[in-house]
Length: 173
Length: 198
Figure 1 (cartoon, helix red, strand yellow):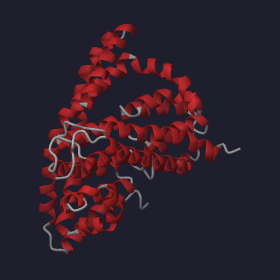
Figure 2 (tube, each protein chain N blue to C red; figure 1 turned 90 degrees about the horizontal axis):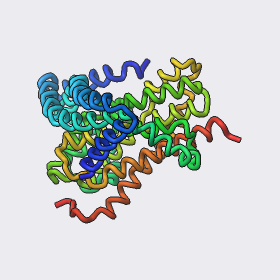
Figure 3 (tube, rainbow over the protein chains, first blue to last red; figure 1 turned 90 degrees about the vertical axis):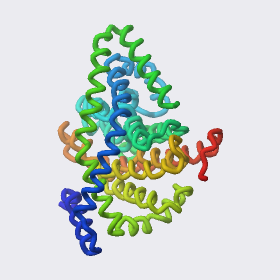
Figure 4 (cartoon, rainbow over the protein chains, first blue to last red; figure 1 turned 135 degrees about the vertical axis):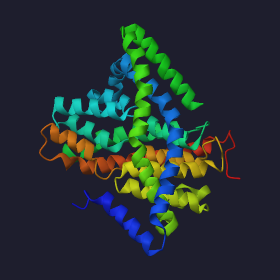
């Protein structure tokens, strides 16, 4: 109940706090929202670039080819090789990853090792390239330095940890 | 340059694979579709983005963000040592972290973007160590209640869709720690571009 109401509760709480401090809450709200439009304008070009490449990659079948090549490596790392497509898509496209994950969950069953691993992978990682494009687009960054390799390290650790945590919690012994 | 290399690699790979697998038609359609989808995505998030930016402005003017900032300061000044003195940036980061912890991904992004913009004022065009850390923390954000995935499991006939929560939390924490360690480690190696605080 509390969780379902969290957004309205935050809005109400912030408004009341502002009024108590004699801030013109509505005027501040509108001024902030206007600034949001400025950020949006800078994100659009970055996302047009990224999503064009992502959609092409998805349509070309390249991900399936890479998945076939990578699956022996995954088994060696202790990750169920069936999840390889999810791993490849996850950093690139959130909706595609959800599609691949849902497919795995319904094919192998939500309570199977593969189904659970897929669910944990989806829950514990983010769409890295999207996040990078949006943040650097909004901030006007050209030199991204080590941000992408570091973010991909976090993703890789997330996948390994997901496979490991599912084994530890559901399949001990 | 990193994005340029990745982008070019993605496009070239798609063209080659498209031709090799006979999906060339689909690839050309997808290119145009992707460009259109980007604008649609931005429009669909415009309302939420503006709303949370508005909330942030109210929080700033009322001093609520400063309170939050003081609360999270002991943790954040370790993660973002160079901007620890900049109150504006720290307020935005604190709000971003709070939204992430509450599982409000929709709110976390606009707040994080504002933090990124404030940070970039100090080093225009170049991602400073702190900005890299901000991006890494947000690509590996901790989600307390993964509702979308739970919905998928429920739809697949799972009777206890939230039984994965401990595993999700464990994996998230490990992933965030790995990201932070990687960012701190790479910051030491990546000294060539001399991107330091003035």
